[in-house]
Length: 198
Image (tube, rainbow, N blue to C red; front, side, top):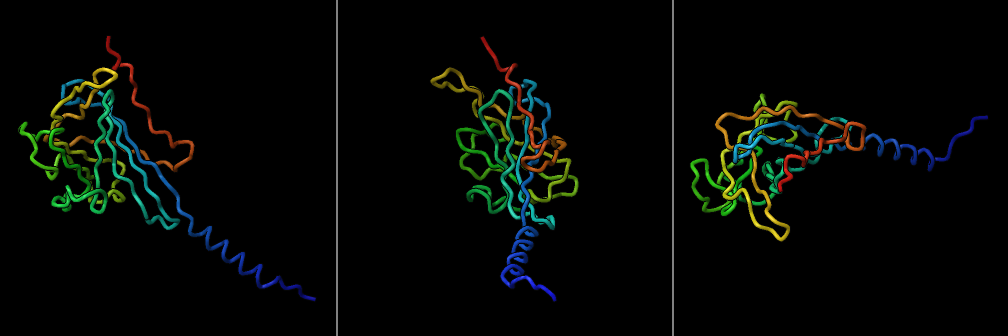
């Protein structure tokens, strides 16, 4: 005598296997390096972003790329077309970019920005990637603007708004990829020791 499982159980098993097969995995990408900020001080920098990938490896979502500077409250966001507003729309062909803000940034020549459409930075890699999902393990970071002010007064005292020094030569940054929640999903913290002042 053959025992057949109920059709409902078979359908449930098929649905579960399909759902599990279509699960997405989140990854963090990060790299820390040392360079000078615009004031000529040696600082650590942390570049990071996250992606969501299907089982087949197709990227379904990405966050902007964030560049943080040791001892500074200013974070730079590099975005691709479709992320953020229209400020950098004219530079879509440049790929992953950051545009400066009037009052906060100066051009490479030290002139005040008149609007939010000035290209101040771009990220790519050796293959010429123009999308965040396509960035490889070694990135090229180009920065061509300066902070208008590096120190501002706050209720808690002076605050730092400095960021990486503008350069005609790209910074080369090695990036690590780790599964979110895994043992290696630990982007390094930027030390605050050098930031302590009397």
